[in-house]
Amino acid sequence: MKIVLTGATSGIGAAAARRLHARGAHLIPVGRSPERAAALSAELGIPCHTVGFTHLASFRALAATLLESHPGIDVLAANAGGIPRSGAKTGDGLEPVFQANALSPWLLATLLAPSLRGGRVVSTSSRSHTTATLPTPLTGIAHDTTGLGAHAVYARAKLAGALLLRELGRREPDITVTDFHPGLVASGFGRYLGSASALLKLLATPFLDSPTTAATRLIHLATTTEDVNGHYHVKNRRAPGSPLLHDHTTATALWNLATRLTGG
Image (cartoon, rainbow, N blue to C red; front, side):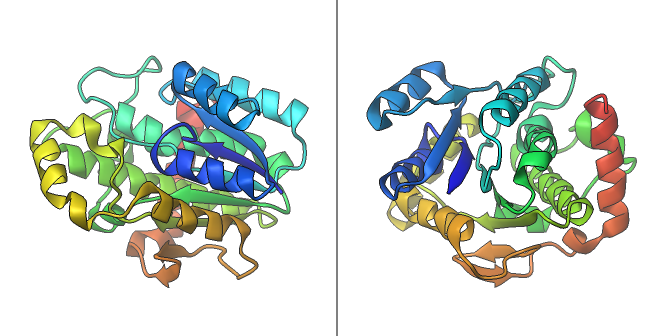
């Protein structure tokens, strides 16, 4: 099984990479940090690609490389994400949390679609998307975070990402699309949220899932023969998710916005 795994060099992704490699998967890991990518490559004895998650050009370059060197991808595990520091725009002039968690994963999946037909996209989502709303006009999601805290910005980016990938699944019926909440995970994922988050994380650590536990949820959806298409999962079980996940009108509008933002 040929699996492209983004966010593979830390946290959930690193745990999943080690398990998938041990199980004999043809793993194609992708990470953000060149240093961590080199370390993972040395550990597993396989190449590890790097990409800038807030640089659309790097995703286009990655997709071109993968299409040429790895035709017939079985799984794209869109696991990368996080909360980049707010304030400055990305090099593409966009709001960084939206670009990292929604636009970049969608762009990679869309560009890889010719190689993914007959396969699936598994996206690491977040339960926080169930609390999110999208702005009016919709273009605000790419530029404006006025009045929103870090959690709200992240939640709406995750909702947008889920909508975009579901719309890909509707447009590409030969590609299964599914996503999951990994749990509250004891990894470095919250490092951008500041000192208050660090204190909360310290207090909550005994109650958090390990990256390995979360990785088993990703691996389950990547390898299961169950019908997971179009479904959101919590602890390997279907969950309702946001009602907006079934709003085709909003998904289409978001798709059109993403296409314009990426120059399509």
